[in-house]
Every structure is written in C-alpha cells, then in structure tokens.
Image (cartoon, rainbow, N blue to C red; front, top):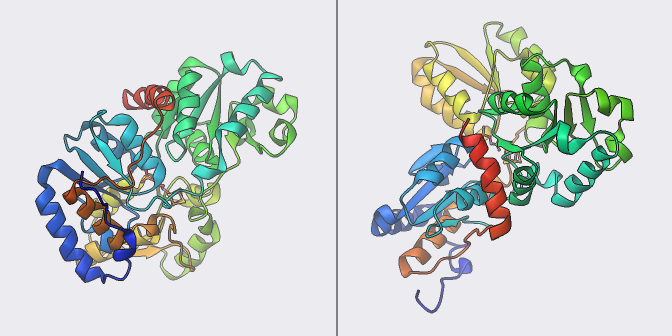
Length: 364
Ligand code: 13P
Ligand code: SF4
C-alpha cells in the first residue's frame, strides 16, 4: 500500500467527463482483480461503469461467486455488507460513498428487534412458534439475529419461496423491516389480511392485543420505503382513464392497493425482464425508482414500448444517488495505487450468524 491515500476532496470538482476517463483507465489497469457491481437504481453516470448489474439477489449471488479481489459495490450499505459476508476472506468490498444507506433498513435495529422478540415471548412461545425473516434491506446484525433464531433472509425476488420454507418449520413469521413486502407476499400466498398484524415497536406489544398476536400468522414490522410510498392506487386509475390498455407493474415495496391493481409484481430485475420480453407497442406504468424507469424507457422505446413512471412527483432513491462518478473514480484510483478506501467489514460474530441466515436463503 502506498503511504498516502488520495483524498476525496481532490475529486469533488472534477467533471463527470473527466471522471469517466479516469474510471475507465483505472478499471483497465485493475483488470480482473476488480469488479464493479451496479444496482438498477444507480444513476446513468455510474451505472454505465458497472461490469454487472442486478437486483439484490443477483448481485448477492455474484458477490458470493466472484473471483475478483476487489468488489466495488455501487449500491447501498446493506448490499455491500452482504457482499462482504458472502465473499471469501481475502476479498475486499468497497462502498464508494459510505453515506449511501437505506432509510427502510434503518427502520429496524437490533435493540428494537430484541425487545420485540422478548415482548412476543411474553404472549406466545416465539422461540418455538415464530420464524424471524429479515428483508435483505437490513443491517448485518439483524441478519445475524435471524441466523441465531433459526430464521432467514429474503429478497424481493424470492420472498414467496422463503415464506413457504418458514411455514414448513413454524406456524408464525415475524417479518422486518418492510411491512409492505411482507403483506403483499403473504396475501399472494393466500394468507388473509385478518391473519396479519402490524408491529409498531414504539407501542407496547407492537400496538396489538394478546389475542391478535396469538391468532396472527404474520407479524409485520411497521417499516417502509419512502420512495415506494409515493405510489398510490389512484394514480393507476387516473392514468388508465387516458390509456386503458396500460399494463401495470410494481415493486413489492409498494403498498397493498398498488400491488393489488398491478398486473405484475416483482423485483427490479423481474420488472426489467418483463418489459423487455413484452410484445412491441405496449404501454407500461411502473411503480419503482425513477432511474430504472427512465433507463428502461430509453432502452425499449424503439420497439414502440412506452414506459411511464407511476407517480406524478419525482421518486428517486436519494441514498442510491449518493454514489457519483467522483466517488467511483476516487476509490478506483486509490486501488490502482494500492490503497483501499471505504471498505465494508462486518464483524466476525455477526458475519457468522448472518451468513447462516443468508445461506438458508441461497439454498432455497
Ligand atoms: P431489488 O432487490 O428488487 O433490486 O430491490 C432493492 C431495493 O432496495 C428496492 O427498493
Ligand atoms: Fe432503501 Fe427504498 Fe432506496 Fe430501496 S429505494 S435502497 S428500500 S430507500
């Protein structure tokens, strides 16, 4: 390692075009030792440099099997943590901007989940009756909590299979941190809404009665994605007044009303594939992040496909947006110099247990 790492301040005034050239040059020098992963919500200026793009599951799988020494993750913090957990000990995961978090992931933390588990145990035998499931959008110590309690992780693309796995083991599920993914998935599997309760960790017993908890099959943590909150069922009705032929596709983080009205519900990767594979001259209304929707529209417009963003107001993921070409150039040029900046390292205890919960998911 060279003695002095380059400073991010020296990059902040570079134009995107200068960064482009420097990113390309650094990647060429690093060759196979480095892979750049890009989530579908990344802005174009960053996304174009990704060697591999995908949803959370695809990128997790890639990180688990990559041979590159350095994994530069253009995504958010929990994704880089998963990459660190699943990759080999000699591999290094880098998050170009450490401030790229996920507001939904922050809605559950280990302290609140531990306290909630204890409260559940005062009403039912949670240790025997409940499987904890964490959406991959969560901190590593919550994945570790699931590993410690025979629980599991899920993503937006495998939630149904994961819930099936859980119900084969135990009768109830505590699902965190996204209330909507839990409800949308459970309902599509045939679990009636009356068999689900919302757990508001700010209230005693999550705001439910003992009888409600005893009768519930799914206990849904009261958390949400602020980006997907922007989509509302009325927006579908309004749009269809103008274009009745529209096909609606939504990410399962959108609320129940939107997902019930949607023709398709699925992960970012599934949304892309569905629209790409669709017949020409079709019209799509999409409930997910704006960068993905705009890029998809550009990609398929020559086939006569029209792809529209569902919300009348802009809904971008501000934390995904933190990763810019300046930060990407900075981490890559440091790697060329032999300096690792912004590595993500999950502590060994959490790593072990989080890996157990992640491996349960990957084995399904
Ligand atoms: P995907 O796994 O579907 O890409 O979703 C990740 C995410 O954060 C959606 O908000
Ligand atoms: Fe988190 Fe929502 Fe951003 Fe996805 S879109 S990373 S859930 S804040």
